[in-house]
Length: 242
View 1 (tube, one colour):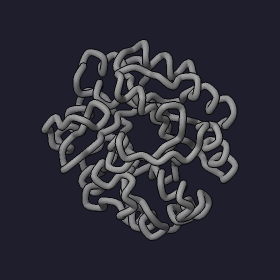
View 2: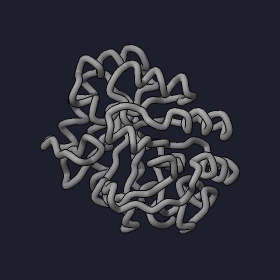
View 3: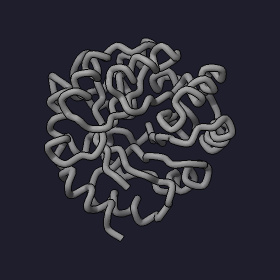
View 4: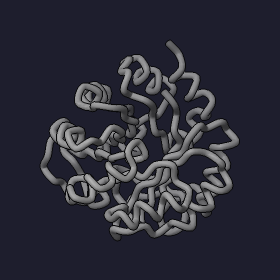
């Protein structure tokens, strides 16, 4: 398992939202490259970048920031937010992303999903963002009413093998991860997934590692790193412990 720092970009800055609410934000870096370099220097192995402006508008907005992050940090990055066409997917890959993260589009446009699976293979990631046990789409502003396990099953049948599971209810609250949800997702995923949401401490990371789910490949961490609850190195060590 690896620790993956999150870089969420909104209006050109690095921010963290609370429960996915754009109205509840805190700015941490005026320039997202500052965050990328900080996590790179701290020993991060990969980065998770979200174009929040793109998530709201339906097309990438912060491609130049993605280019700069990829160029200066020199780390594998996966990028999501507003990827609702093959053109948008190509744009983030050309900007330097190793993987493209689909959210809403993976459920709303099955033709796009199938084309993305064929085009990207293992470079495609689908983000399953969950509020109240059901999928939240359109930049976390809509509930599509589908249970998460069912959505993962459907996506797996269409060839998706990499997922991000994000607990929107816990996002930015530092209240601890949803371990039971992580177990259920692990049972549903045919492939691998990253967990995101609520991580606040090294104990939280150890608890996720202690689930011993072989398809849980890593943990995305945002606010806990920005608030210096622990370092990248300490977090990785917690995930590495048997």
